[in-house]
Length: 105
Image 1: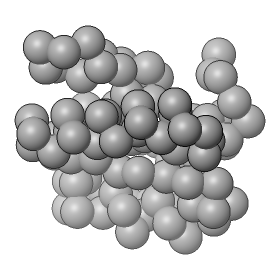
Image 2: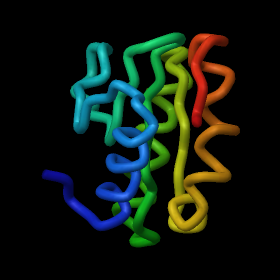
Image 3: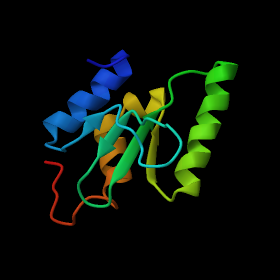
C-alpha cells in the first residue's frame, strides 16, 4: 500500500525493473525521518517524491533535504514531471548508484 498514485507508479516501476526497494523506510540518522523509497543495493539510495506545493509541505521538504545533505545520503528527488517520464528519468538518476552490472532492460 502506498499513499498516492504517483508513489504507486514509482513502486511499480522499481518492481518491474527488478530493483529491490522498501517503502517508507526510516533513514538511519538520529532524527526520525522516513523516506518514500529506499534502495539497499549498490550505493544505498533514498528516493523522495515531492508531490505538493503547500507551504507546510515545502517547509518539511527543505528540512528533509537538509537531513539528507548533512548525513551524506544519496538522494533522488522526483516530481510529478519526473513521474510522467519514469522510463526516461529513473535510469539516468539511478545509474550512478547501482552496481555497474545492473541492467534496466
